Length: 105
Image (cartoon, rainbow, N blue to C red; front, side, top):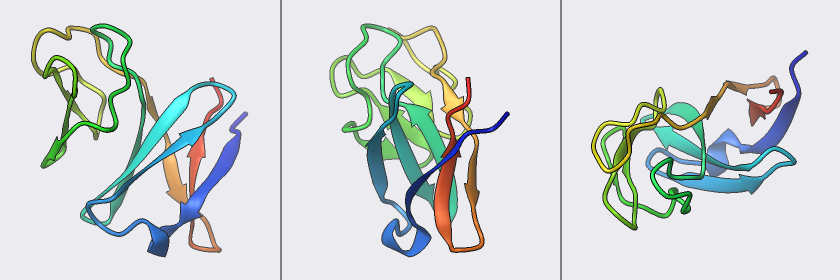
């Protein structure tokens, strides 16, 4: 069963922005990529460091520690030193215009 939690009003996350939230499951980064919202676990699969403070290029996040790249849309590891994908989470906009993520594992 889905466990949707509020992140922010969609107007508070303009295109190009991101927000980190703490959940019982993990730290999760929510991104607005040109009006589409995506959520990834804020952890690099290479060394366990935080990921979301890294630079974004298009739909890629670059790990600030060792430069591994991940696709924000699907969590795929794109370059070494990371080889394992990162977890992603479903995102929706509810009737209140609230960005929500499903943290049900």
